[in-house]
Figure 1 (tube, one colour):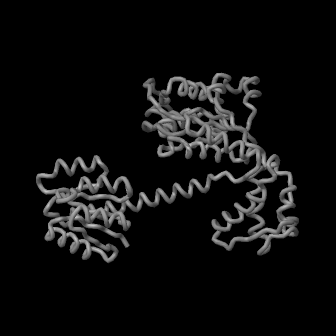
Figure 2: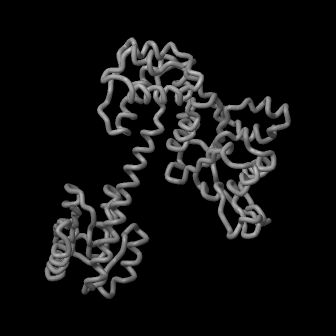
Figure 3: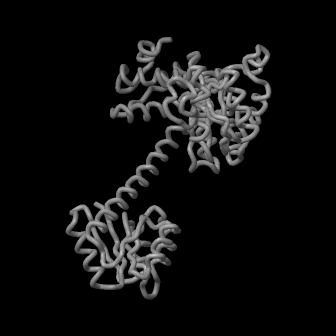
Length: 387
């Protein structure tokens, strides 16, 4: 049920608004306040999905209420109620964060449409916040070993800066987790995080993917298209598996880093971009440089900070924590009861040679959840986790 608060000092208009909203939907619960002071006190004590607030009121006007509530509960949408002479003020309140305004006397259709739109927006804001929390949980770094604690310490120091970071480590170690943590702990967290898997994009398309193209630049370019660098403006771009990027694309990335500008394929027009670049690779880039496969000048631009993510075999102490995490996470994803694992089974898994690292461990735990008993035993490991 959506809770709506009407703050209006004119009793007749207040009654009309409450009546219209109450009769419109059984899902609306409507409260009322006769002035700004009373309205603010109610808002401090209760949560609402929408506030309809008059602008001109004694004691405390609507602008003061809006300013006060924006500081304590900024997610609540405000629809301002304006008299004929308050229209300019009403428009200004939208610059201050109000969702919209309606004029007196209220037009029924306009009122109900505005209310529905404002409630829809509130719902989206809540969904986005929930999604961000889920994303944060998905990218938590599990472990307390000395090796992983070192990585966490580097992240905490580097994240608030705009320093470029090169993340290295074998496949399946969680390099993307490091990249997400760097973004989420940075000043750019409210801006986009754009991920590009350089190994998954054909070499002839990588430049278009990164920098965009103009219509007619190549056969299938039927319209102008922005690239990933433009999409990441003000935020972070994560170039995963950068060691697989073509030399021509490397040259353009180098220019973007040097000059903070890019140009779309087929265009000579420069586009300014403000992007933090994080890159990752499982390759030995110094070896690639020696073989002429990677630009040395690009390497030095990217590797301002180097983060080496340890292989799972180098952080075996974290395996019990990772198993516990995967038991809970995978069971939740499958909608099944969470299983436990015996100490002996965990010890057996700790002794494995994890060439596929954390990704392989997750797959093995998932297999054991599906095929093993209610409590996963050593015999389950012997049967279903053989390597």
